[in-house]
Amino acid sequence: MLVLGIETSCDETAAALVADGRTILSSAVSTQLDLLKKYGGVVPEIAARRHTELIGYVVKDALDTAGRILDDVEAVAVTSRPGLAGCLMVGVAAAKTISYVKKLPLIGVHHIEGHIFANLLSNPALPFPHVCLTVSGGHNMLLYAPEPCRYEVLGTTLDDAAGEAFAKVAKFLGLDFPGGPVIDKLSRQRNPKAFKFPRPMIGTKSFDFSFSGLKTAVVNMFKDRLARGETLPLADIAASFQEAVVDVLVAKTVRAAAEKDVAAISVTGGVSANSRLRQRFSETCKKQEIEVFFPELSLCTDNAAMIAAAGYARIVRGERSDLRLNVFPNAPLGLP
Amino acid sequence: MIVLGIDTSAYINAVGIVDGDRALADDIYPARTDSLEQIVDNMDTTLKKAGLPLAWVNGIGVGLGPGSWTGIRVGVTVGKMLAFSADKPICGVPTLEALAFSVRDEAPLIFPVIAVGVGDAVYAGLYSPEGKSVKRIGDYYIGDVKGLSSMVTGSAVVVGAGAERYAPLIRQASGMELKSVEAVPSGAAVASLAGIRFSRGESDDALSLAPLYLKESTARVFVNRYKKE
Image (cartoon, rainbow over all chains, first blue to last red; front, side, top):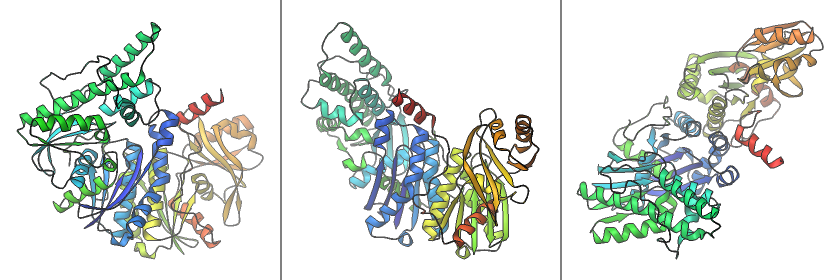
């Protein structure tokens, strides 16, 4: 079954063609990096305007790259929740219209479920049950997946997502966009122990996260030293901050795997592209005899191939959305 | 030529169908929460009521706004993907033009108005009838509705949601008599104007078609101001 996936939940306009939920025929992504640089972050109204201008081109590009026409498509999957309302609406409006004209099954997909399927696209051998950490600029969720399409949310962030903390710290340090990859690159071969930053909630029983305090600690330390006229090794600050985030993410996820007695961990979302996070997860999991899986880099950040794959899984289970499909900007995972 | 017209700029879903000069349907649906939920259903209902399969539609007209920013994004996206996936030509129609079109026999000067949502600020334009259509004179106007008074030089009509309230304000400032017609954008008017352009051999590129916001987002305004300083 050939599924057209559409994703517009934040600042990426994306469309993809995926066959049988496994084979990516095309994955077109138009990022709004220029706008991110200009405005220092995602401005919902501006992002929504850009989606409207790009959506047609991106769908056409996904078809052309795959060498297919719309008549070859057998179902349409679209991110309908959660995300920025005005942005989600553009993708859902497009998907509904295509579904209506071509009389195709339509399925609204939860964005986090998309990220979970990004790893299944990259690693078909990823076993169930497993524990999945989805971590990006907008999400920071730890969940237990006993089988495909069934999830138990173990924890989420109480304030900033890890990716958001990366972006904010990078912005504060005056680094370039996008902050996450820039900190990753800057931190390589640097001393992650140069500065002592807190590891928020690392020892708590709960699987929830909190990165807002860590971000503030970096900012305060920076200001203190600056006031004392000390020189500030940016790369060491970045490396130390990154290490604190990685420590918390790895510790909680590995503990969740132990508590749920699973032998596999899946790490997804934009932050799963971070090289230090991958390295530390791999080292720790090797010691604990847990298998750890990461998506290929192109599937870490927002894309529509993962939405098509998740949509396919839902469609083969007999699920459908009707043409009144709407957006749910704050929908929890598990809402039908 | 059968043209399907939609407009979602005014917190309603307007769907109309015209065949040349003849309106086959002109429906207004409430958009309770937003235009997105019902618009595709609404189009389907209007087509079915008219006994027309989508395949018989020769072209698409879509209201570009101004109006609700979310609304016009939904309408334009539906319009462009309809044109793209059904392989039909499309024309974008400024919603102010569609409003003016619906009262083209009322007066030689037509002021369509759409509330901005702040005080008495409006999006507006000055139109005059021209043949079967209307023609815009000068630029679009965004500002306090009383600012339109300097443009009233003869017999004029104000049209739009709130026209009855706006007309006395303009009259007070200009001293000139004005008629007023309360109206929401009509799908049939959008379809008619698109049809007129199609008959001249014109159409828009579906993929690049964009809403007519007439107003930048607040963030862009701030950044531009900051840059100037």
